[in-house]
View (cartoon, rainbow, N blue to C red):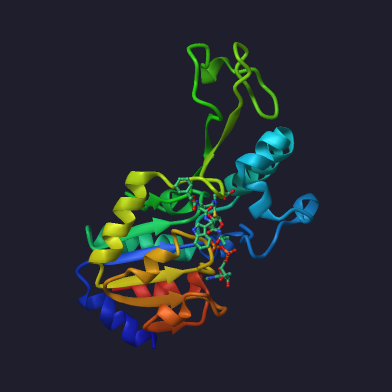
Length: 238
Ligand code: BV8
């Protein structure tokens, strides 16, 4: 089957990649399905990653993101991230990379123009619309830091459940899906929307890379049962 997908890739003028948490699993970043580790094990990430949870307990949710940020800063992109970046360098404009991941590992591997649908965990923004007094560099330190003028809180620059995705990024991702000859869907359970919907609107062939069955298998033309850092180098080498 990998031979078939390599053929489709060879013939593809417009390739698209849609990646999820499984893409970073071999870098040591636990997936959402894997559940949390250590003191966060008892929390459902989908409950924590909401504005409600943050407003109800800002310190707890801020510390959860601080824990994940430290973890992401400690890990390295894996061979799968590097293979995607190298392919794009060898074949400019032939691969649009769309990710649900907020870990920045695609970008650290050298991928450019990554459409990060759910934001970036290493960046912050204001929780409420900033007032004249809201200056990030003057924010009072704490969990979370807040504006000393009005108390506005800093929050991670990620898309929480129930929040809209960045409109231009989503529009670019939908255009890439509707134009693609081949979409590689890597390391996603296909449960979170609108991201998973991109595989369902893909114009071209859809090839899934995942060691486990997913919600999107029924929409796929090929399913490669395996891990991202092992299969992507084989698939993407010239
Ligand atoms: C919105 C950032 C509306 C935060 C994230 C339609 C149907 C049903 C529900 C909805 C729908 N439309 C909207 C919803 C609601 C909701 C949703 O989808 N809920 C689901 C859970 C039922 N969607 C939303 O709330 C979205 N917003 O709809 O807003 C709106 C519109 C206009 C105006 C106002 C509001 C926002 C969704 C984004 C939420 N933020 N992340 C943070 O990270 O803290 S989502 C987050 O979870 C990740 O970014 C990722 O997207 C998702 C986890 O999914 P996966 O990446 O797939 O990871 P998972 O752990 O599930 O699976 C891992 C996979 O990897 C597995 O299959 C495993 O087998 C595989 N794997 C493991 N190891 C490997 C591997 N694969 C390859 N190699 C390996 N080594």
